[in-house]
Length: 613
Ligand code: AGP
Image 1 (cartoon, protein in one colour):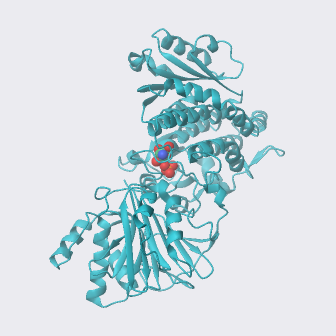
Image 2 (spheres, rainbow, N blue to C red):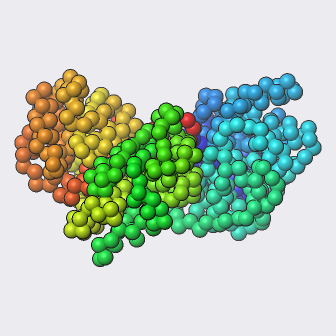
Image 3 (cartoon, helix red, strand yellow):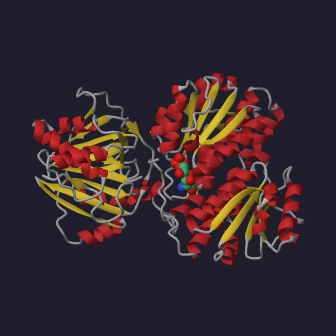
């Protein structure tokens, strides 16, 4: 996934584009570039590396121009290097393009263009598109808008595009299909970006483009049209409530640590207006209209990837336990290709922080075609998945910049918890008394997390002990099994230590062979119905000289005597234990990664949202 930005207005475009790319670096960061147009002169600067390397490259060169586009890349076609970095300029210099997505028929188009004498500098599909648009423009002697429209009607694939035509330097073109694009409406200026984060400091008025919409912006006007016809479309302006401090790191060294510490606030934000403690009610306005259909569901299928999949597993356990509805959790990438059985009695819940994960988006499109009700649990307002569902619940965790998901996970788990409890109550399988007791306890979760965060130094000390480990195992039972999986994912994706999550009872079926005195074993051993069984699992690990780090309920005196390290979390009702138990695992993986000198916010090979298959 890549980040694209564009500016047109009365100001110098350069600083706006550079700062915009810095805010989008979490989307991809193996190369970066910008193009600035000054009258008909185009200055393009691009290089392998991060935005700061691009700034170094530009140095004191010409940065004039009040229209420009920029790009930070996560390579899909062609290695990360200076030549393959965007923007790409067409052979005769008529079009400058930045692109987020994949053009699947680019080889066919490239061969036709080569036959017509076009030459190429890069291995990218994007340069093919730039030349394709130019060839149409020069051959048909049409307008830039028509050339863009005609080219896009003949490509297959996904795109978010910002385009400039040097014969029409007072216009900025933006369009999308499968990759997000937002237009910001300023006063005498307009902004394009892959999401709202580079734009919010200039305006809160946004247009979230739909697939195949085409926007043409001058400094003072915008036209919204479509690649299929040139007529103007109704413009829907969204007022976003993001602020800059939502985005900046504040006093934290990394976005990930900031976002871990934000969780008491973000969970309170997720609950706000939905958990009504005085009335002992849960209100999920986003799905109220479809609740009757949800009540009739024979089966709920949760579709997601990565951390969101583990949040889905938390939802599975809770919905089956408290609402007594059959639930399946599916990896989106597997679900979309295995020709699954889907009926109109099914309800699909897509969980996605970014709302742009290609596999999840494709999976819900397939399920929709087969008549299922599609709900979304997304964090990014106006994201593709959010807009393609029949209804949904936003997690309201604010922008999650760190590639490793933390606050989004707990927000997703809160939403699944609210859904399970409300559904259970409405179906009459959860008693009024337990429902009220759960609501009274859920209110206290943010304060409980604050108490865990206060223990941070102890967790950092434990991280110091295991910073050089090569492998690790995470064990949990019941609701804590998905948390074990999530803890293992956190560690491996930011510290590059190999880590596996297992159901604690599974260890005897193979993984116990791995246990030795070098192997840190995280055991989630809170006071729940599995407690005695998990104590046995700890003894099995200790009998083989394994190192045990146990997450326990505050006041536990039994496990303290057998584990090497104990991290206490406050007592809470069973459904909310995942919200607390995950926090020490987030902090542990963060500190191990920092001590290993890893790039915590932008781990190698990863991107914040995987908008390609
Ligand atoms: C989580 O730490 C990872 N960065 C990754 O697994 C992520 O959860 C996954 O790519 C799904 O992303 P989404 O929630 O935006 O769909």
